[in-house]
Amino acid sequence: MTTPMIEGSGLNKVYGLPDRKTAALLAGADPGRDLAAAVTAAGGNLAVHDVALSIAQGELFVVMGLSGSGKSTLIRMINRLVEPSSGSLRIDGTEVTGMNPADLRDLRNRRISMVFQHFALLPHLSVRENAAYGLQIRYVPAKERLERADLALRQVGLGHRGDAYPHQLSGGMQQRVGLARALATEADILLMDEPFSALDPLIRRDMQDLLLHLQEDRQRTIVFVTHDLNEAMRIGQRIMVMRDGRVVQCGTGPEILSSPADSYVSDFVSDVDRSRVLTAAAVMRPALLTASIRDTPVGVLDRLGNAEANGVFVLDDDEQLLGIARDGDLATAVRAGQPDLARCVIDEYHTVPPDQPLVEFIDLAGKHAVPIAVVAEGRLLGVVPRAAILSALASSRRLTHA
Image (cartoon, rainbow, N blue to C red; front, side):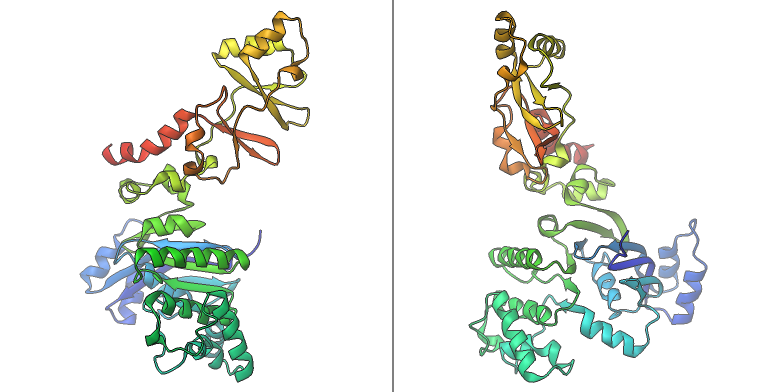
């Protein structure tokens, strides 16, 4: 197994108490004790409580929750803008909490960049100079840093605005400059703290599209904080839901929608457009009825009758999907004394890849003798019956009102 790019365990952050008192409270913590209540009783606030996380290299990982859930505190603990009160945090296998000031500065300058909610641009610098600022504090020569800034600005669609100043740009353009500044450093890790929340919905979606496009071009490790569940579901490879400083659930969008950990998560996801998040793989069922190309029409027809089905998927000797055989065609072959199943195989069915969202094929359900087939590299992975789609789309309402 490869080493996670970011890995944390037992992370806690207490505000409002002296270090010695915080240490004593955390040292005395045990599974049967309400640590949050103890910290509150002492006059403090437990902002992050026993958080563990593991983020793979190149993963776009989303941390989400409502205001006060601890998500922004957690992301700032990764580069120690916020000092953990206790716990372990490793970047590419190296412990961060014990770094000396010089090593920590090097980590922040070279390996981690941050994009903020309110752009954090320097108003007296041009767009190009703002984009180059992260390189300037590394003492990169002026010619090189401006060239890299121009390249980053072109990547975010602002190659023609390098000489402008922040006040001359729209909010969406200013956030593109903030993203370009992070890209110019060529850091391995991007920390993005609600970067699009101040933008209007259309510009926000454009920025999400831009981020996904940039991630396809070069897979950085991105930790993205948001309170918007639809945004999290759209961009996150995995999503960690936080509440009151603790992790409630961590998984892919489809996993969280399909199996919410508790009523809090269930209520949280109840208004999400499930058809745009759930994929074929998330709702598929095993193919209960398949036939080998070596089978006979009479044998397959008998199996269809016993299963009360109208069609069957036909596989070759290597289990590659060849097509389907319908009951009517099989009956015709039996009456004609035809022993060759291959003559009954047709291609009147629909296939989808496992990662295709429901919204893109929901209209195809129930149109053929067999369910929609989920196929990868020619192999039948499973099927999506119409009832499975209806069940998946209705499940959030059942959970919410249970």
